[in-house]
Image 1 (cartoon, rainbow, N blue to C red):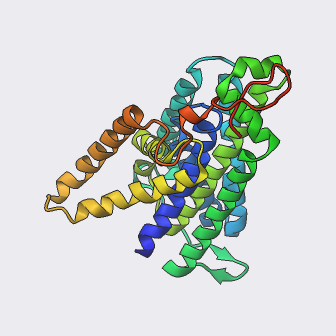
Image 2 (image 1 turned 90 degrees about the vertical axis):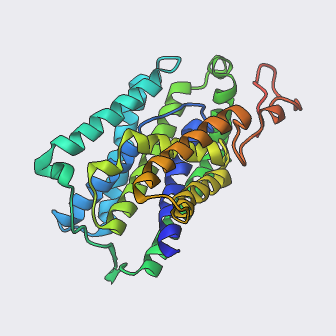
Length: 303
């Protein structure tokens, strides 16, 4: 149970971070597993090889992934259309190839074993209960960041961008700059989740950060609800519990993995067609329904 809650917390951070892009800006990304992995490797190597404290390691993971996210988003988001999806997938492929082939750093497919548990001001976070407390604190931090972004004037600009990007540009807003800032925050939160994951399982290898994992993280957002912070957490809790539910079914262990991927795919397709706003997301019918007094030329958006 504690293991489930810790993993659900880590995936809640990933879901919250990706929801910033999909739910608030309307930009789809397929690189979140790569950012998750970069954060995990940076944090693990910082503690394991440089012998620095975990707090510096997680800070390093946040900085490196934030920079990586902004480097991809900067040029890619200047081009309209779905170019960012392609660019983010390219980052996913490049990062996975680096995890596999930079054997002197990552030890390739064999992975990095023996990653130390976090040590904060002399207290070693070793047992499941202390780690659950640490994970809960990080989830609250991520929730606070996303909530602050979503309910600030900057967040209202983001929602306006997702509704009518051209109108927002006509008002003189820096649309590309806003998107890059959000992509950087989103990537940084994914890096924090990666650090938590690496020091919890004490072992990382490339198989945990594949393109399939990126699709799974996107499924958390779609099922939970785009544009909803609580939907992100609900999606993570629901889909993280799915493998545990499959284990009680009378099926061979060799079938559990493919069956899980099949169910994720079915859920993703079903929600895309039947309830695209997810379980707790914003309903398209609620948007633009009740116009409010506004400055002439300002796009109507739900706040």
